[in-house]
Length: 480
Picture 1 (tube, rainbow, N blue to C red):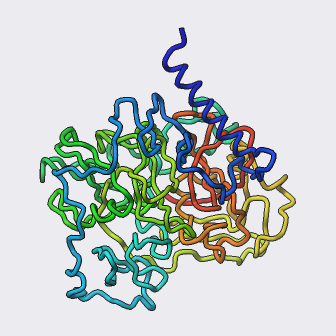
Picture 2 (picture 1 turned 30 degrees about the horizontal axis):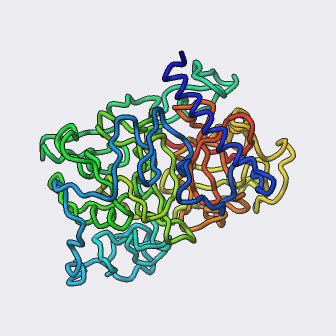
């Protein structure tokens, strides 16, 4: 008799192969180097395969097409638990009464500087973005946050993998050396020190402080309460209602909650776990499902970004869908000019990121020159398998440095500019960037034949096979 685990694996592999075969193209499909569908490919709203592709074990499907864990209730249309704040615009008119001394003109001010603007509906969280005062969640990509405003957290991937299974972490120079588990904060810190869960200040409304990013999180998904999040019914919302819910939330003794942007929400994804891909002692009873962010998809105002805690995908979908919600507070910290491109070593540019402290290879691997349009003849081709991408960055000598590595999934996603598309990156800092997938050093914890990839067509994060399709790479150094 086939075991449930084998059945689950075959089901998942079948879904994986279906998605991969779609990416490899039919008779009229454009073939991308990462094996994915082109960025403008249409996905019908009633598609059987969820937009993030990866199905968790014992996957069930909710009425909106979202993947649910085996023990999760199938949730109908949006509900709001009476234990939480009603979905109302509680500060409408309040903001309009006084600006509290905040600037209304952001000319000359750094990104993330708090400011004051009245919107309809009006919200408390207003910040400067590109010298304009905006309210994230305004409805289109112009008011998306421009990136992370906090120290980058590590991924919590603490195991090493070859191209299909767990392995003993390799030594320098060996195959698969340089992957996620071998670098970063996680190497020197235990996972238990990352989050502090407070269940005593307001026992029914626990909050979680991230000791790395400094952000404070709603300790239960919306609709749930008490120390272990065992009371209430988990709720789902349309995107617009999710924004109003967080803006009007009084929880844990605080009232300055907001719907997180995708950089914030992705920061608590645990790449070492799946279903749910989150630290469950810190965030118990988290649905293995999609959670809304405040960001809209560039060029598509009816679509918003979500983070899937079934596996960790960062994707986008129609705002009328109903997904889960977890609110955040804290920050932001104003950020000066973020990227500084240095071409002092002719032909080998580097880009310093003042927000994260990382230094990036200024050209896509395989290319060189101050404008990244010259072929790097020391590199064979410009796309790689996952193993070869690890090796290329680990052996790279560029701009006088030899300590390069392949970035992990959160580092790589941090340079996505979600105001832009094709490519979704600052092209002044990173010219000639292909609008395709770039490898990260992080494996997909549930199905280790896959690794995390960031698509610079739109900024989405998914997990294609490590062997077969080849993708681009950009190396990084420093950090943590």
